Amino acid sequence: MPRSEKWTLADRLDFEALVAADERATDLAAIAARDARLWEEKIAPSLNAEERSNRATVFHRWLEARRPGEILPGKWFTSTSRWFNASAILAGLVLGFAVASGALYYAGERPVNIAVFLAVTVGVQWILLLWTLVVMLSSGIRATSQHLLARLGEGIGQALASVADHLSGERRMRLRAELATLRQLSGRNLQPLVWTPLLALQSFGVFWNAGVLLALLARVLFTDVAFGWESTVANSPNGMYALVKALATPWLLFGLNFCPSLEQVEHSWFHYQSGMAALDRGATVSWWPWLILFVFVYGMIPRSLLRTYFRTRMRLAMRQLSFDEPRHRAAWHRLTGPVIHSNRPVSEATPSSQHGFTATSVTRAQIGCLLVDTSLVSAKGEIEQWVAKQLGWKLACSEVVEVDYPSGNDAALARVAATLPAAPCWLIAVPAPFTAFSAFTQFAARVGALTNETTKSEGFVVVVALDAQGKPKAPDPEWMRYWSDFLRAEETGCVTFSYAP
Image (cartoon, one colour):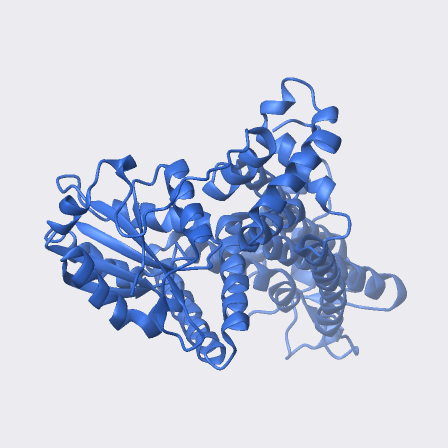
């Protein structure tokens, strides 16, 4: 990716949203004319010969040319991320200051216990960090979490589907398209999106420690406070001194001699039996420089390093995002490739001979699998009858799938995978109109990959339209022509049929 074209996550979301909007559009000629105009007037003049072949550069210029006047998610995402990060910073500062102030409470009856203070300010952070490390390294916990998230997503999807059933056909299809776009966006950009809340969490941690340090400095500079330690099992302060000196090693190596001496440790050992009178004031005051450096070294620095690490990972993830998906290739060809107009009549009863199939060879496929898009579930029975009558297939399985959600449908595709070795022909029933073509390409590739290496599979597509009553009917010839041309251009190997009652 050229240095002059630095893609941000907001840029990527805006780009994907524009590509998805073009997929949902029905006037394909207008889209092609618009991109041709943008290329000639705004994009091509600003590119040199090397940049014209770089997709990242071309698409970034295309995005900048289309942004004015568009309502895109990138701006919303940027504003939300900034608000979320600012809230995390403010919350960390306030809560760190409040918790540390409570742990530093001193009324003269007993000293501030350094062990309690460090436990609630730094110790809690380390416990959470260790737990996070365990979760990241444990495949069992990670698999359980993914399963729970999948179940949650399935439940939300079913709830939305039940709500959509009460909408009109046009609004239901629009809602399905919007949901599919969001799922595709989150799926393709999941890794960079994951780092955003992690960065905010580390910002919270950094400013939590800043709040702790501010509370500690304010308590030492403006009030009288005594620090001590207490233990019911320690027989002498030697062990405590050894621990304190070992923890001070990072700054002692740099010549910062801020560590209580053995004598100061001994004279700040608190006993209820002796009370405050037995403590040496100089010894109880000697702890605060050590405490400040402890919070800074073991609290602030690890959080700052994690924040830097997550930011670096996010930048690397952005560099690894590619523009090679089918949806991207369609936009790329509109911008840089020739525009091909086809007036070829569409055969509505037989498959295209482009792929070497004939009606006779298809009819010989006695056993096959049918996958029906969820938008056609009301016509599933009629489609099954059409397959049996027109193709002569005996269906080994018939599944309802979401064609516009290629990364989902695990349960249905698992059943198809178990059937394909014995029934290596599969037919996907798709609706017309339908605009998530790149999602279909990915879905078809996933279905084709289900067949093992020793079994040859053949894929077919039947395009079905629905009337006002939800009954299947023949699609518009223009949609059939687009489907045929698209599948041929993408080299999916799928033959296209038109449903005919």
